[in-house]
Amino acid sequence: MVLKSSEFKKIRSIVHDYCGINLHEGKEALVRTRVMKRIRKLGMRSFSQYMSYMERDDSGAEFLALVDVLTTNKTSFFRESQHFDFIRDHIIPQMGKRCMKWWSAGCSTGQEPVSCAIALREQSVSKEAVKILGIDLSREVVHAAKTGVYGSEKVAELPDRLRDRYFDETKAGGYRVMPDIRSMITYGRLNLKKKWPLNGPFHVIMCRNVMIYFNRRTQHELISRFRDILEPGGYLFLGHSESVSGRNSGFQNICPAVYQKQ
Image (cartoon, rainbow, N blue to C red; front, side, top):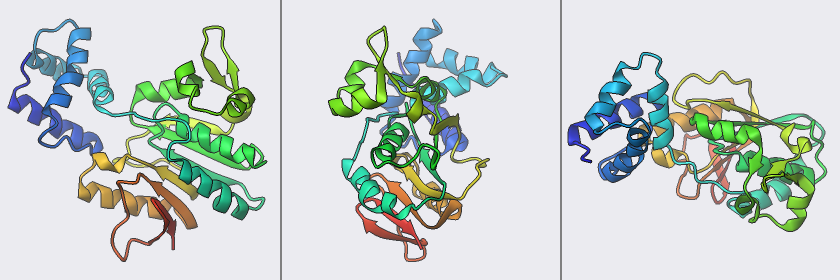
């Protein structure tokens, strides 16, 4: 099944306009493979047939399904472990007794916010002291995160002690996050390029390996918006291939991929 150049450019344009994801030249094979999942599911025979169907869908549901298949949602528990060491050694000791808000921006299926909640509870931070917001663009991964259930292969990356303390085994052989942890997290869907109906300020924002999918202009805009919604002295965690650039960014790099608002 052939993806024409004009069809790729059309998909590239509408997805970028909607959410800022940059499907640059060289992503044709990825787009073809992922969109074919929708084509096969709908029983269609060509990209042109699919594009016509999507454009005629006034509900917008098929366009959102397209965005879902084009987003990348790789994640794991305690990914980039040095970040969680920094949380344990530097952020938690500074917290005091005030209630703080944390934001996992690009939470995927929930392993990042769950890891944050576990890290806090491991240091005896009460579940009332921190409210964690987990958001993602994809409806499918947000739904999965809300269930709080993970397959045994996902939980296998955790030490047995943490698995036994913070997860219940299900009858189906999976593992469900215990209520003590789930109560600390609220999940929702949000397009980072659009208006943010969020109540800040946040003390910690984790947006790791998200900005790599945006062009430079969108990255700068996002960093500026993160700075505005962080409290003074708040922390921004990025992926190791991402950075805050510019002397006037308002951030200081204090360790690899961790920035503090000045």
